[in-house]
Image 1: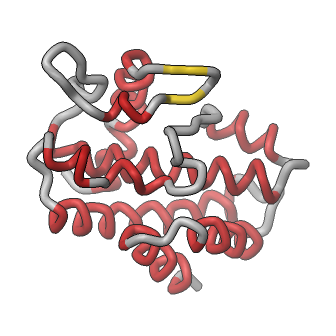
Image 2 (image 1 turned 60 degrees about the vertical axis):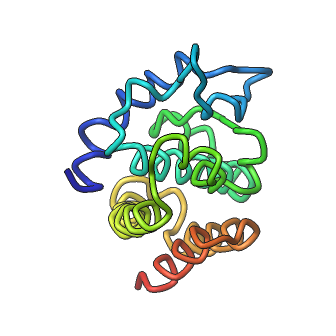
Length: 174
């Protein structure tokens, strides 16, 4: 299964499984929801092979929602209504949505750094192209270039290897 197939066939269901099991506090998903122990695993219903795609989609959901809320408040209600994205924070995720790829989460699930970066790059390539199409053909209340520039500002605040991959791929979109 590739990134696009995952996103359009399984992400929504996987998100609901996770959302229903995650620890919530004042509208936030607690970071501990990503950690598993002997009696708890909010990600247990998601295939190990799909976890990097799930984390990628969730990270982009967080950063896109943050970008729209912060930079385009006038159209944010319409954006939220059309996407169905909930307002979510995961610990420090508002500032660094890539925390889900951290060693603490990966190691316990037998996901290597190389696999994470490879699948994230694949997902980013698909998702950012799809996002451009969404803003140029469906949600035209904001110009794609404005969204792209706002995303670049938000991503640059949370640099890591994943931020660099995102920035590079986003910048390369014409």
